[in-house]
Length: 225
Image (cartoon, rainbow, N blue to C red):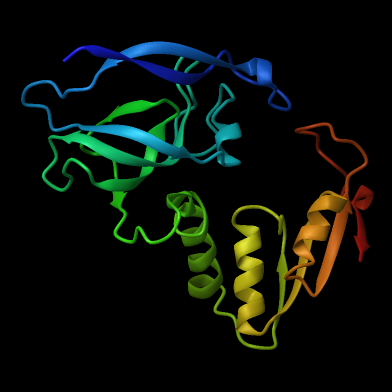
């Protein structure tokens, strides 16, 4: 089978401070859309990619997350995404299956058989939901709030980063449970958003946007709306 073009988002070099557009590059390589003979790998067509906060940690030269090695400069980013199986040497997946899990930031990915992919059984909702409430953020929010937090109706719940992918779900779960929700966010626009579910939205402000600085918590300001 002929090779096809495969656009990729790659990390140029390790990042310090805030991520800039110039730290990434869009390159074009090629890939053969056929598995090697005897391979047990899975060939994917990526449909949706999720940009998650943990990815910034992997852009530093020292891995902050224990179970993940940092990205390699010149190589594609990887993270959670939704994909369609084009060809499979793995018995659990077949051509045409829709899956979500870890994949690279590129049009097509060849993933090892050891990679955990979750089959998408319910396709009556937008597939992009599997990068949010039906994917990793939703599982994290649900397990953290209901399985670990064990909330009870009438309790007060504080949610930090309440406008984020996980935080906004925790806030809504808390509201649906009958809890009093206090949510914090770092900008006025975010606070306006969390007012949709928070009984008491709070804007927190740091004295400087400088990243990776050891702040004196006395400098932290909280403004209730």
